[in-house]
Length: 515
Image 1 (tube, rainbow, N blue to C red):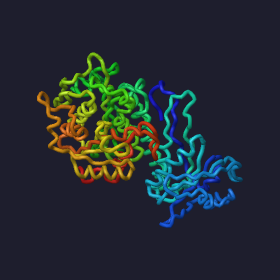
Image 2: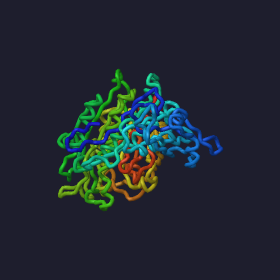
Image 3: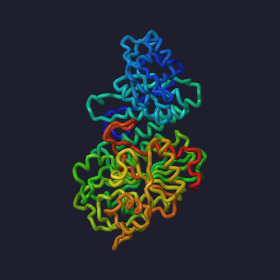
């Protein structure tokens, strides 16, 4: 996964996947074999899945006895390990057998099983697995996504990561089965989009500034068949992007707006969806400065922009039927002698004005410009913005669920269903009209810094810039960072949102009932 800079060390890549018709234990050169274990039907028993009989015979071991001795339950993500110090006649390199709980073999179960396998095979070079083979093709996709994302690693250690992820994964399935191959491809692309989102969000801000992010977008566009347009600070000023300019004016590195365009083959007249991402490459809070402990994760305050870039990069591989434009509003919210002051008034693209009473409520200021531009120039059938926007969302939802708002019922239902299907769960919040009073200003069209109903007030602020266009606002501040490893989440930036948006945009009819 290339980055347009030589300032990063060589980075860890996602595992490489392949299909094989051989039983897992017979795949030449693999160090680890993973076999599925299912829960029994209501009696506390466990069942062994495909490949178990062959590997048990090759090892001379009764695998049910192994599970019984370890009191295995078969729950999703449970790992029972058995050492294989001498390998097998078919594969002398084999050193470890994993019996992997898959619960009831739902897609969520398989995603979690894949994540558990990824952690169990760190420091190993290769894995052969039949875990996916007890479900449909959607289960294979979920297993690959879980294994990919739980393998994520990023390091500046001179010797590389302390525990590198497995490099090669062989799945025991017929490589000639087109449905299986298609599911594998989709899983690789979905997992890769989440990986890219995390990578961009994890890059430290002494490297990652708005011009750097724009360079990544240009590199990504060239590799993914997209067109890319970048607004520098001069064009932003000429065209009236006062929100992006105002937030970025105190930084030594000037702001940017990035536009990425995807057009499906033969689809130049297809409906257009616009995705807008918050690209704050570091957030000090400005003059309304954050406490130091709150700044520690602010290199990931451009997660929304990273997600938009990663989604656009994956659309062609997944055959999205719509035109999709991604807008990333990028700035560094810094402090200097010319920083925005509380009480300043800025004019957004299109003319609407904002009284800035809280410079730490900067995300809505840059998003507003991009939303107004989208409505004015792009005639979208729907707009979705995504941002790590408000601490209030984390207070409301904790750290495992993203919040969202929508002005269109079918769009709201579609996104909720996509969240459930992708296991990036979303919870809808109301756009309470009575709370408009919280964003009222005596000197401008709106105030950006209300202290009441923080997440709702921010959404109401943004709603004014989309008019009657079907719109949803994803506030993923709650899930922008994971404090620990949890299923497919790794510690640090999560890149939350890539899977749910790709699930929606590549469904059979993404705009059904919307446009």
